[in-house]
Length: 111
Length: 113
Image (tube, rainbow over all chains, first blue to last red; front, side):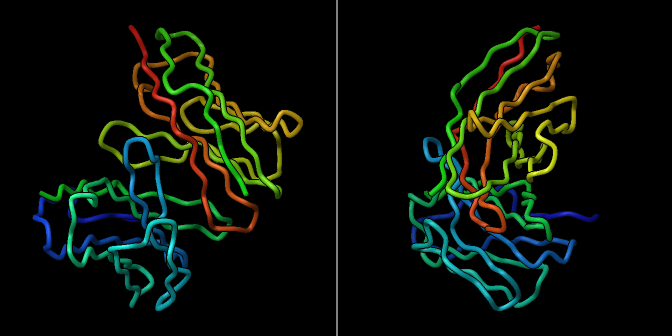
Protein backbone atom coordinates (compact mmCIF):
# COMPACT_ATOMS: atom_id res chain seq x y z
CA UNK A 1 0.00 0.00 0.00
CA UNK A 2 1.17 3.50 -0.73
CA UNK A 3 1.87 5.83 2.14
CA UNK A 4 4.07 6.07 5.17
CA UNK A 5 4.46 3.24 7.65
CA UNK A 6 6.26 2.86 10.94
CA UNK A 7 7.43 -0.21 12.81
CA UNK A 8 7.13 -1.37 15.42
CA UNK A 9 3.90 0.29 16.50
CA UNK A 10 4.59 -0.46 20.16
CA UNK A 11 7.91 -1.12 21.89
CA UNK A 12 8.94 -1.71 25.47
CA UNK A 13 12.64 -1.64 26.26
CA UNK A 14 14.97 -1.13 29.18
CA UNK A 15 17.27 1.72 30.06
CA UNK A 16 20.59 1.44 28.28
CA UNK A 17 19.41 -0.72 25.40
CA UNK A 18 19.67 0.29 21.77
CA UNK A 19 16.38 0.67 19.94
CA UNK A 20 15.72 1.36 16.27
CA UNK A 21 12.43 2.71 14.99
CA UNK A 22 11.73 2.20 11.32
CA UNK A 23 10.00 4.50 8.86
CA UNK A 24 9.17 3.71 5.26
CA UNK A 25 7.44 5.82 2.62
CA UNK A 26 6.35 4.86 -0.86
CA UNK A 27 5.96 8.35 -2.39
CA UNK A 28 9.67 8.92 -3.10
CA UNK A 29 9.47 12.18 -1.15
CA UNK A 30 12.88 13.79 -0.69
CA UNK A 31 12.28 15.15 2.79
CA UNK A 32 11.58 13.00 5.82
CA UNK A 33 11.24 13.91 9.48
CA UNK A 34 11.17 12.41 12.96
CA UNK A 35 9.10 13.98 15.74
CA UNK A 36 8.33 13.04 19.30
CA UNK A 37 5.03 13.87 20.95
CA UNK A 38 4.86 14.42 24.69
CA UNK A 39 2.18 15.83 26.94
CA UNK A 40 2.80 19.50 27.49
CA UNK A 41 5.30 19.78 24.66
CA UNK A 42 3.29 19.00 21.55
CA UNK A 43 5.32 17.68 18.63
CA UNK A 44 9.02 18.41 18.57
CA UNK A 45 11.35 17.79 15.67
CA UNK A 46 14.21 15.38 16.39
CA UNK A 47 15.94 15.04 13.02
CA UNK A 48 15.15 15.52 9.38
CA UNK A 49 16.61 14.51 6.05
CA UNK A 50 16.55 16.39 2.78
CA UNK A 51 17.61 13.41 0.67
CA UNK A 52 19.52 10.16 0.88
CA UNK A 53 22.72 10.64 2.89
CA UNK A 54 21.72 14.15 3.98
CA UNK A 55 20.47 14.57 7.53
CA UNK A 56 20.25 17.45 9.97
CA UNK A 57 19.37 18.08 13.59
CA UNK A 58 16.04 19.38 14.71
CA UNK A 59 14.96 20.82 18.03
CA UNK A 60 15.71 17.83 20.31
CA UNK A 61 18.40 15.60 18.69
CA UNK A 62 20.39 14.55 21.77
CA UNK A 63 20.41 10.79 22.34
CA UNK A 64 19.21 9.97 18.82
CA UNK A 65 20.96 8.93 15.62
CA UNK A 66 19.49 8.77 12.12
CA UNK A 67 20.60 7.47 8.76
CA UNK A 68 19.19 7.64 5.26
CA UNK A 69 20.88 5.21 2.91
CA UNK A 70 17.75 4.92 0.74
CA UNK A 71 15.18 7.56 -0.10
CA UNK A 72 12.28 5.48 1.16
CA UNK A 73 13.68 4.60 4.59
CA UNK A 74 14.58 6.82 7.53
CA UNK A 75 15.38 4.82 10.69
CA UNK A 76 15.74 6.48 14.08
CA UNK A 77 18.07 4.87 16.63
CA UNK A 78 18.20 5.46 20.35
CA UNK A 79 21.77 4.37 21.08
CA UNK A 80 21.27 3.98 24.84
CA UNK A 81 17.64 4.44 25.77
CA UNK A 82 16.70 6.57 28.77
CA UNK A 83 13.38 6.91 30.59
CA UNK A 84 13.05 10.45 29.27
CA UNK A 85 12.82 9.00 25.77
CA UNK A 86 9.51 7.34 26.61
CA UNK A 87 7.27 9.00 24.07
CA UNK A 88 5.24 8.61 20.90
CA UNK A 89 7.41 8.94 17.82
CA UNK A 90 6.06 10.09 14.48
CA UNK A 91 7.75 9.92 11.15
CA UNK A 92 6.67 12.23 8.33
CA UNK A 93 7.52 12.91 4.72
CA UNK A 94 7.03 16.09 2.75
CA UNK A 95 5.53 16.40 -0.68
CA UNK A 96 6.99 18.77 -3.32
CA UNK A 97 4.66 21.63 -2.30
CA UNK A 98 5.61 21.40 1.35
CA UNK A 99 2.82 19.46 2.99
CA UNK A 100 3.95 16.91 5.56
CA UNK A 101 2.23 13.54 5.89
CA UNK A 102 2.59 11.59 9.10
CA UNK A 103 2.92 7.92 9.87
CA UNK A 104 0.77 6.15 12.47
CA UNK A 105 3.36 6.52 15.23
CA UNK A 106 5.42 4.27 17.48
CA UNK A 107 4.69 4.19 21.19
CA UNK A 108 7.94 3.61 23.06
CA UNK A 109 8.16 2.80 26.75
CA UNK A 110 11.59 2.78 28.37
CA UNK A 111 11.64 1.04 31.75
CA UNK B 1 10.21 33.49 14.37
CA UNK B 2 6.79 31.92 14.16
CA UNK B 3 4.32 30.76 16.75
CA UNK B 4 0.84 29.30 16.93
CA UNK B 5 -1.74 29.71 19.68
CA UNK B 6 -4.80 27.55 19.87
CA UNK B 7 -7.09 29.51 22.09
CA UNK B 8 -9.01 26.57 23.55
CA UNK B 9 -7.39 23.45 24.95
CA UNK B 10 -10.78 21.70 25.14
CA UNK B 11 -14.04 22.19 23.24
CA UNK B 12 -17.26 20.35 24.00
CA UNK B 13 -20.14 20.34 21.50
CA UNK B 14 -23.33 18.41 21.01
CA UNK B 15 -23.73 16.21 17.99
CA UNK B 16 -25.29 18.16 15.13
CA UNK B 17 -24.18 21.58 16.40
CA UNK B 18 -21.42 23.75 14.89
CA UNK B 19 -17.78 23.37 15.82
CA UNK B 20 -15.34 26.29 16.05
CA UNK B 21 -11.67 25.77 16.83
CA UNK B 22 -9.67 28.97 17.13
CA UNK B 23 -6.11 29.46 15.99
CA UNK B 24 -3.94 32.58 15.92
CA UNK B 25 -0.46 32.65 14.45
CA UNK B 26 2.49 34.92 14.14
CA UNK B 27 5.02 34.70 11.38
CA UNK B 28 7.63 37.00 9.98
CA UNK B 29 7.04 35.63 6.51
CA UNK B 30 4.09 34.68 4.37
CA UNK B 31 3.01 31.49 6.08
CA UNK B 32 1.44 28.26 5.03
CA UNK B 33 -1.12 27.06 7.54
CA UNK B 34 -2.46 23.60 8.21
CA UNK B 35 -4.98 21.83 10.37
CA UNK B 36 -4.28 18.23 11.37
CA UNK B 37 -6.52 15.87 13.31
CA UNK B 38 -5.33 13.10 15.60
CA UNK B 39 -7.75 10.43 16.71
CA UNK B 40 -6.87 8.44 19.84
CA UNK B 41 -3.79 6.27 19.34
CA UNK B 42 -3.54 7.32 15.70
CA UNK B 43 -1.21 9.45 13.63
CA UNK B 44 -1.86 12.98 12.43
CA UNK B 45 -4.13 13.29 9.41
CA UNK B 46 -4.16 16.41 7.25
CA UNK B 47 -7.57 18.12 7.29
CA UNK B 48 -6.80 21.13 5.13
CA UNK B 49 -4.11 23.64 4.20
CA UNK B 50 -3.74 27.26 3.21
CA UNK B 51 -0.89 28.16 0.87
CA UNK B 52 -1.67 31.71 -0.31
CA UNK B 53 -4.44 30.84 -2.73
CA UNK B 54 -8.11 31.19 -1.71
CA UNK B 55 -8.54 32.43 1.84
CA UNK B 56 -11.48 30.09 2.50
CA UNK B 57 -10.14 26.57 2.45
CA UNK B 58 -12.30 23.48 2.35
CA UNK B 59 -10.99 20.25 3.78
CA UNK B 60 -12.06 16.71 4.35
CA UNK B 61 -15.03 15.57 6.45
CA UNK B 62 -16.90 18.87 6.06
CA UNK B 63 -14.30 21.06 7.75
CA UNK B 64 -13.24 24.45 6.46
CA UNK B 65 -11.00 27.25 7.63
CA UNK B 66 -10.65 30.91 6.76
CA UNK B 67 -7.32 32.68 6.59
CA UNK B 68 -7.63 36.25 7.90
CA UNK B 69 -4.37 38.08 7.54
CA UNK B 70 -5.58 41.21 9.33
CA UNK B 71 -6.50 39.15 12.38
CA UNK B 72 -3.63 36.63 12.00
CA UNK B 73 -6.18 33.89 12.45
CA UNK B 74 -6.96 30.56 10.83
CA UNK B 75 -10.03 29.26 12.63
CA UNK B 76 -11.44 25.82 11.81
CA UNK B 77 -15.18 25.28 11.54
CA UNK B 78 -17.69 22.58 10.78
CA UNK B 79 -21.43 23.26 10.52
CA UNK B 80 -22.58 20.05 12.18
CA UNK B 81 -20.46 17.92 14.50
CA UNK B 82 -20.45 14.15 14.24
CA UNK B 83 -19.44 11.70 16.93
CA UNK B 84 -16.48 10.69 14.79
CA UNK B 85 -15.11 14.25 15.06
CA UNK B 86 -14.06 13.60 18.65
CA UNK B 87 -10.28 13.93 18.45
CA UNK B 88 -7.43 16.35 19.01
CA UNK B 89 -6.86 19.06 16.44
CA UNK B 90 -3.59 20.84 15.74
CA UNK B 91 -3.09 24.14 13.99
CA UNK B 92 0.32 24.28 12.32
CA UNK B 93 2.26 27.07 10.63
CA UNK B 94 5.11 26.73 8.18
CA UNK B 95 7.16 29.51 6.73
CA UNK B 96 6.65 29.65 2.98
CA UNK B 97 9.23 27.46 1.22
CA UNK B 98 10.56 26.25 4.56
CA UNK B 99 10.48 22.91 6.36
CA UNK B 100 10.07 23.84 9.98
CA UNK B 101 6.57 23.24 11.28
CA UNK B 102 5.41 25.02 14.40
CA UNK B 103 2.55 23.27 16.16
CA UNK B 104 -0.13 24.77 18.32
CA UNK B 105 -0.81 23.16 21.66
CA UNK B 106 -3.81 21.25 20.34
CA UNK B 107 -7.55 21.40 20.99
CA UNK B 108 -9.29 18.32 22.25
CA UNK B 109 -12.86 18.06 20.94
CA UNK B 110 -15.54 16.17 22.82
CA UNK B 111 -18.80 15.45 21.01
CA UNK B 112 -21.81 14.72 23.20
CA UNK B 113 -24.72 12.66 21.88
